[in-house]
Image 1: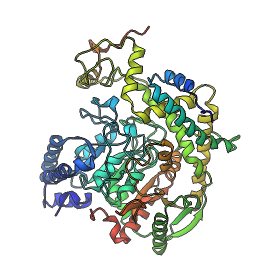
Image 2: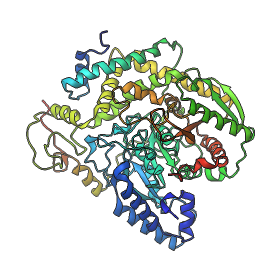
Image 3: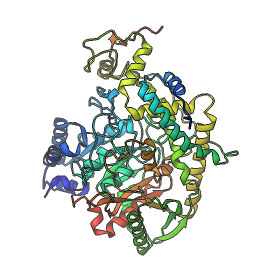
Image 4: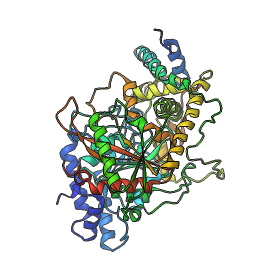
Length: 506
Length: 98
């Protein structure tokens, strides 16, 4: 038995039956990381000693017979480096936070600690989660485990690569405009962006506060469901978190009957830019669901094409405000000091406070963060606000209304996750706009705040490559109706043998 | 074609955002941001005369709490202070403002 290849449910059973210990499971993951991560490069920080300590504690609890129903106890995971972990370096994959040690835990980390999680380390992403390929990390690029010449997607690229390569059993990342769903599709794993406010944002390094969602990546739908239940719920530290009832998703998934559920297929997502293999794979999956008893209804989401331009006004605007706090006087990095480890060798070159700001931000931020700060500052500046930001927020109302109208008629909406499979590293380096268009099937759900999951639904050979790459299918649901998208996802996964285990193929 | 965001405008915005840019960056951003704005222009074709802007995606309104200060753990305070590049007596020390 290769322990690190297990799903959470399998591993949890093994721990409870004492087939193996959490320390053994954790060591299996750590050794996989050591073996593969010089090529894949998922991790920014590996917390080996901390992980083993947590695993020992978990084993003790299991031995004592405590917490029998706690399925995450002793299960090793990776955490995207935009999520604060107390006393553990948290960089957002950015130069300006390369020394930052948070004084508190994100709410979701506290919840996982209470469950007895084993954190293996912090994983790479696009700096501040700005990007769709993990190439915008200020440190290094993460590679797709299926084909190392390709990107893992982004921004949660390290989360996807670590789960897909069995370096861990699950990962927590974030999805602001597709950052969990797209890398999940590119790496052949399950990625769930819950409803906005379903999981507390307290302790995320904020990017676009109005669409940021802590999100889940796992090897199958059932694992995703059980993690969601543990992380969801209202938090007094996040005023936008929701008090809506949290369902027992795993319990709900036991009933696999999808007869009579209505699936909407929006014509705006099956466009000519869509790769034909992906189109076929998603259409076959829809047919499969129809055979299982779902009703398929063609729908229209007429404002789909405006989602990306709307997103790329709202996001930079919020980014320019959220990144204003990184000013070189309180988060470790500063151009006040010449040497990287602060508090030594202070050199008085920078004379005024304003120069500290200008220089620290000049050298601390990478290109994409700067690009977004400039674009956002412009969009919010006097004379342009009405034309850009206000107009975008109004169009956002229309995009949201598209979903409201569609969900009068259907229970879920199915689309491809991405128009293409994972592209080659460096392919979109010269043109930021090309990379923004990666989000065409993803931004609308983010702007509307609705939940969406990407699950594997096949493979396609890229035009410029020999290795078949995973395809993702997106299932979008009503606000706070994660249970229905999980149910459809599970029904599909159960009935397609080779898919949920596309991971095992690795 | 003239760039939608001129070099001077990039300089001005960078100053507002307190971010230092090299000459090369300014030139590149002027070009790239102009392309991006050109693409975003399509939003103007939508009639939004009677449309309210989104304020919160899931419909929450006025979530409030008492505005009270809470004590912060002494050790946690030390972690914060350790992150200050320059510090004196537990306060952030900054360069001269004027």
